[in-house]
Image (cartoon, rainbow, N blue to C red; front, side):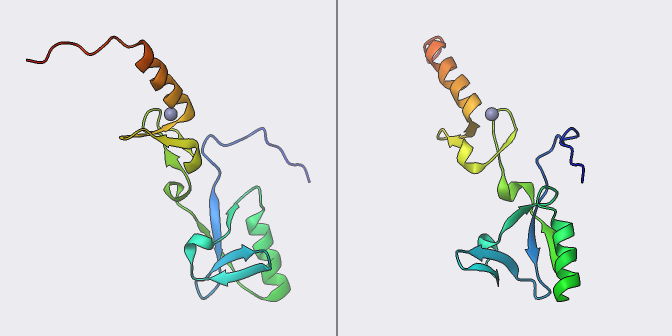
Length: 124
Ligand SMILES: [Zn+2]
């Protein structure tokens, strides 16, 4: 039962949704777990941290229910910062009118703006 976080992947961790044989998604509300066709309410699990494969195997052996882990594309979970091109959770990004920026890039941009030389008079 040794768990090591030393070999952390550079990439964001693989996220999965769990689907049943009818293709419905595993979802959760205060009453518990259920299956739904609504992809947006599906539970998103971390494939490794949540031991998804192990849990699905347990469910299959215990209940005879075959469930599948369906990888969620990065773009569905994360948004890319248009400046540094790192991936962030959507709520961590700011839209400045033209681009999505992470907090760092946004701060840098504001700073640059404040210290940048004024508009050049190259208009004719
Ligand atoms: Zn950025």
